[in-house]
Length: 368
Ligand code: AHG
Ligand code: MN
Ligand code: MN
Image (cartoon, rainbow, N blue to C red; front, side):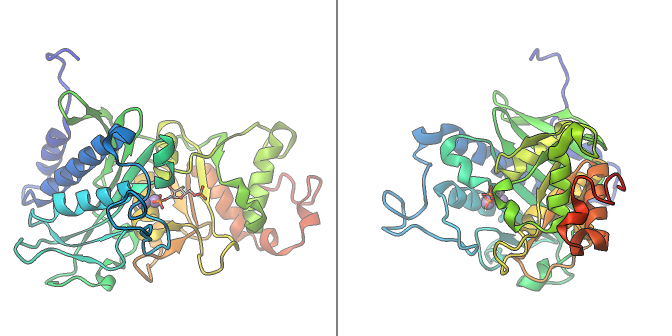
């Protein structure tokens, strides 16, 4: 890139945004820049792959923690990079005086800011590495974060301080570590995408004011779970699969990367719909993905780009969280498809009547 070609850095973008709020202290910008630095450090670790000795499970043979693999609060085996990414988020943001506390997929309880650092008015909630089952196969992974306000005067954070519905988020974003590293951010005034310039080590604004097309012919779901799906999802997917010969009268494409960040990013770039719905695979887990650090930030970004995010029954942004690591059914993407899937959930017949009514030649063909 020629030096004369002016490009907006993330720093410039944040400073210009802040000028619209003359009373702002600058704390928020410092926090976002530290989050961006954490993402850059994770991007470097990911990029070295096997050369960096960062692949594989944490703990376990060859790991730092002894002979047994380490398991997180989700009951999932932690990868080395899950642990390293969690540490990067904690230690690159904890010192700045902007945070009252943090919560992470990888930590059972909220993280307290060490007492030798000043505390601030924000809470940071994150999935330090999303899609980590993909690390060892060199497929895109990412980090997801959400910024909330801490309750007034809080000294030691506790779980309930974080249990805020998604619509109360101050900012949200993700970094994707793919062929290029990108940071996609909303501060509540639209969605902007920044690409990491590896020469400068700076995020540069490359995708201003992202907008998700309202219609799509691409959907993403892990169909190995189809036998556990509820009727509205079965109906929607069946109709997509029927393509031109069904009521949708168009052919659909299917994708499944198993990195939600990568699926969300594809949807920001060209539309689509993603579903990890509530199902009956494990009745203790109402959904696979987590509300506070996966669903809420992605939902905020989607809505800010003209898309939608829903449980199937209500907007994600209106859900009152009940616990830090709560899971939830999540459907997001192009607005008209999410509306259609919601309408299938809300139509009582669709869930409760026996299957024959929803066959190709049923009464309900063409009614939605
Ligand atoms: P994480 O790696 O943070 O635990 O999240 C993984 C999530 C998400 O990224 C992806 O959409 C989903 O798990 C993949 O699920 P399947 O293994 O069912 O494909
Ligand atoms: Mn995740
Ligand atoms: Mn994760």
